[in-house]
Length: 286
Length: 262
Image (cartoon, rainbow over all chains, first blue to last red; front, side, top):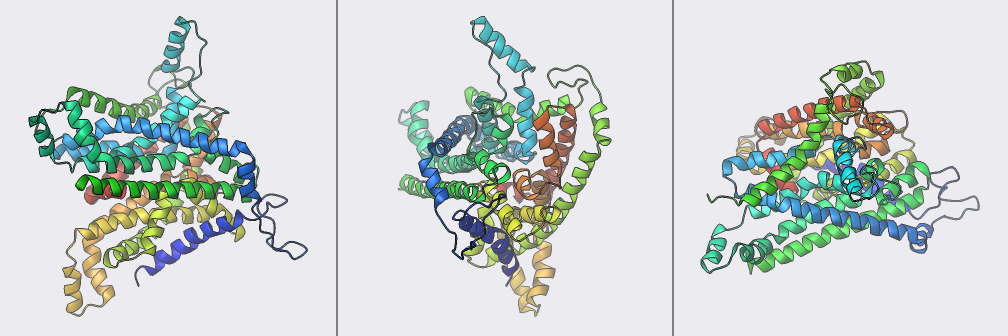
């Protein structure tokens, strides 16, 4: 059977590691990092829920989750505001231009992730034109200068930057299918541009909005490189916490706990978005 | 066609500028005769010269190349098989396993493979990184190949079988030549994804193995230097060439990446 080899590969190198991580989340950290032996010296099997308990009892972790969700939500909102007009324009342009306009949205996604982060290090750097301009303006109002780099602002700008194509593509795929005669009919019945958008285009585009939101929100929730490079000391997100547990503190069980909660959140969101999109898609067809 | 609103054009222009100005700045400053990356001073190729003499960077590029080639070859074979299987049969488990590594945050694939390799006493290095890259490349290849198959006349394969071709020969001489553009495009995509990957590599490479993105990471964690601009420019050029080649070979590439995200 042709599906055998890829199935076997993914079962060994994707499904098994995931299951092992689930198991690791119930074990104890080893003396020198990693995991303690599954069966201890007295022959007891060492499985516990200490890691999960820690997540509940130490509020700092819940705070990091909430902060990560906040960053991801803000990123999603800004991507929607920037991406909607862009997707609309591409969907409305002549067929022969669409592929090129779309390719221009996708291309930056294919450039190296680190290069895209590095670009913002340059733009927001303390000696660059933008920081000098902003701080001159602030000085004019008597305010203290602010650093743009190594801040929540830098993290958010870069999150929006790397996520934008994922909002535009599903939005475009939806908007392109809209029946223009609906808008003409609304116009004939006296609806102005604003009413036509809010009462026809936007409700019909909701499946695209949900799909785009899921594609932006989920990766943004687990990001670690952007806050690691562009963030300040207060910009520790779940991804950074997971990296710390695995590579610095070397507490693998707790790192696994954090990873599993993140996976569960991502799967729940993806499932929720699919469900809502299907429901709203059904409603708009009725 | 009706005219687009001027505000719509303006906001789309802002979005395109937002996407491209940062990358343009990286490229322009790679030719800038200043350490600071802050303002234009004058034209120079010094940073590229410095790059050519940077042994660590060249070693990292060599590692990236070895990993990229092996990961793309294996994931193309496995991804093509998966694409064919998903096109021909109504499968439940395989599509889930194919898409999951793409759908979940990258860091999760990275840390779970880290635990897995260490538990099995696999030394972290080129092999562990290549395996990690294959897990997420298979899905991209499978999606492109399946899109190509969807646009193909399946009765041709059936005709070959009716004429007495074995399943392998029917695949080798009829199906494969027809889906070849998709397979090549998938291979180029896999190579690009592998060369560019940072997050999963970061967790599965161990201490001794440095790839190009890992080398860039350790440089920009210390300071901003135009040498990074130079290597970034070259890397972007390579990616651009590969992706345009892939899109030319298989025009459905654009549509299939779009469908996979919607």
